[in-house]
Amino acid sequence: MSTSRSRRPYLIRAIYQWAVDNGHTPHLLVQADYPGVVVPREHVQDGRITLNISPMAIQNLGLEQEPIWFSARFSGRAFDVQVPSGAVLAIFARENGEGVVFGEVEAAPATEDGGTPPTPPEPTRPKPGRPQLRVVK
Image 1 (cartoon, rainbow, N blue to C red):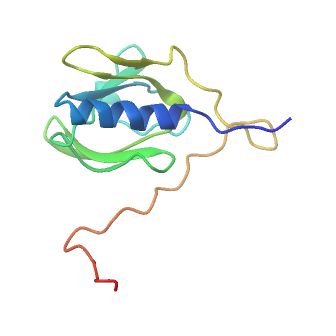
Image 2 (image 1 turned 90 degrees about the vertical axis):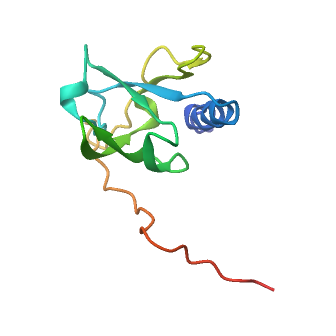
């Protein structure tokens, strides 16, 4: 029996792109107590947090790697957010509610001793400043 990758990260990227392409505001509903979730705890309600991930609201969105990460401002304070895709309960457009509801979190990956893994190291983020592009002939 082969194990396949979760489809959740792919669906999150697809709905995000669909929402942005249609001028909608993508939001993530996240289970805040899932292992590896880093969010401002003062904004968590009933163990969940809804995050506006529109390009106008955040910076440096990383949807291609695990965990999802970005920088945002909460009550005027900058905060680096990390969300494992397994913690995402839904991704939807604020304007019409369309999107994907996953219903429950995915099982957190277990370590060899049966426990949950420690919080992963922060992913390498692009350095601010001028892009480093070059002409390839």
